[in-house]
Amino acid sequence: MSGYPSIIQGGMGVAISNWRLAHAVASEGQLGVVSGTGIDAVLTRRLQDGDHDGSVRRALAAFPLPKIAQEILEKYFVPGGIPAGQPYKSRPIMTMKPPKSLLDLIVVGNFVEVFLAKEGHNGVVGLNLLEKIQMPTIPSLLGAMMAGVDYVIMGAGIPKAIPGILERLSQGLTASLDVNVGPAPKDVEAQSPTISLDPAIFGITQLKRPKFLAVIASASLATLLAKKCNPPVDGFVIEGPTAGGHNAPPRGELRLNEAGEPIYGERDEVDLAALRALGLPFWLAGSYADRLKDALAEGAQGVQVGTAFAFCRDSGMDESLRRSVVSASQAGTLEILTDPKASPTGFPFKVVQLAETVSNQAVYEARHRICDLGYLRSTFYQEDGTIGYRCAAEPVDHYEQKGGCSAETEGKMCICNGLMASAGFASSRKGGDVEPSLVTAGDDVKNLARYIPDGETSYTAKDVISRILAS
Image (cartoon, rainbow, N blue to C red; front, side, top):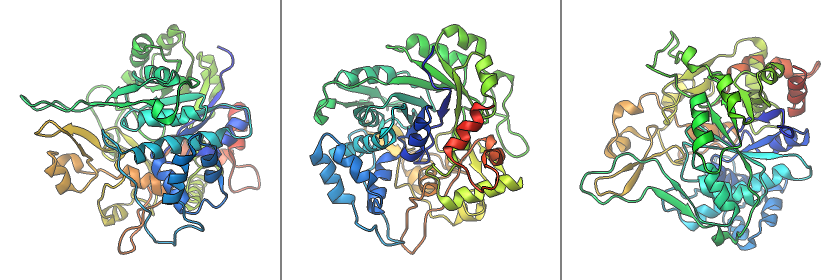
C-alpha cells in the first residue's frame, strides 16, 4: 500500500481546484487535483479575459494537435481581455451528439488544466469529475490522459463504467458510456442513450492509464464497485455529510431539522471494517483536515481535504469572496446550510450564507432565471423517442413545456452560473446585470483561522498541508 499520498486535495468545481492550486499541492508531494467540471467554458473565458500571464497559450502550444489549438485561439482569445461588463462569447452546450468544436474544447480544456498542474515538478496530479454530469465525461478523461493525469476521482453517483472507459482510452479504443435517461415512451423507437468517442480522431493510439478512485458514502457501494467493475477500481474516497459541495442524501426517509437541513443518522455512518476487508486503499473526507492520525489509525491511506484549500491564496476562488469567507470565519459569524433543494441534481448541497451571493433571498429572487451553461441538465425521452434536456433551475415555463413539474423547480439554484461566478467568471447579461456567486464549503469552513500564520490575514496551500501533516 506504500507510495500513496497522505493528502488528497479535494476537486472543487467550477475552477476552484484550478491548475495553480493542484500545482502547489503536487509540488509539496501530495495529490493535487484539478476540477474538470465546466472546463470548456473556463478555457474560453480565460482566453476572453486576455490570458494575461500567457499560461493558457503556453499549454495550448503543447497540445499535440496544433490545428485544433489554433482554431480555439482564433475564436476565443482577446488580447488585453474583453471590456468589463461585456458578455462572454458563448460556446455550444453539450448534447448526446455534440459538435466537434465542443469536443475539442472539452478535450483541450482538460489537457490544459492537467498540463499546467503537472508542469515543473515530479508530483502527482488528479482530475475530479462528477458522475451526475455524464455527457462530457469521456472527452474530459481523454484530454486529461493526453496530458498524463495520474489519478481520476469521481463521485455524485455510481461511476462503475469509468475503469473500463479508462482502460479502453489507454489502448486507443472507442469508449462508450450509457447516459441515464428515464423510461422511453411505449411503442416508440427510442434514441440510444449511449455516447461514444473514438480517441483516433485526436490521433491517440496509446496513453498511460491513471488510477481511479471512487468517491462513496457507504461500504455497500464500495463493495459493488470493487467486485463489479472491470477492471476494478483502484481505491476509494469515503466522504461524509460534513463535506462541501454535493452530499449523498441520507438513507431512508428524508427528515429535516429546524433549519431545513437533512438529518443524518447511524445508517449513514460508513462501515470502515467492511472497507478494510476489501483490501483497497481508501481516504477519509469530510471534516478530516485535523484528523490525519485518526484516519491512519482506521486503516486509511490518509485524508481528502477540500474546504481548507478552497479558501487559500492558491485556489481559483474570487479574491473578494475568499476574503469575505475567511474574515467571517475568523469572526465566528459564518453560517452554512445543507440545502436539500438548491441543486438540480436532487442531492443535498452545502451553501455558504453570504449577503452578496444567491444564498441571500433578495439576491436569489432578483436574478433572471436562465440555463445557458447546461452542465446539470438531465436527459429525458420526448414523445417521439428522441432525447430532450431540461434543468429544474431553468425558467419554470420552459421546464413545464418539457414535461417537468413546476414543484420540482422550487428552491432550485443555478449551480452552474453561481459556481462559475465564484471563480471570477461571472456572466454579464443584457441591461448590465451580472450573475451572482454561489459559494459552497464543508463544515470545516468555520475553522479557517487555524491555517493562517501569525501576523497574516490569509494562507497558502503549503500552510494547509503543514497543518494537516502535524495533526
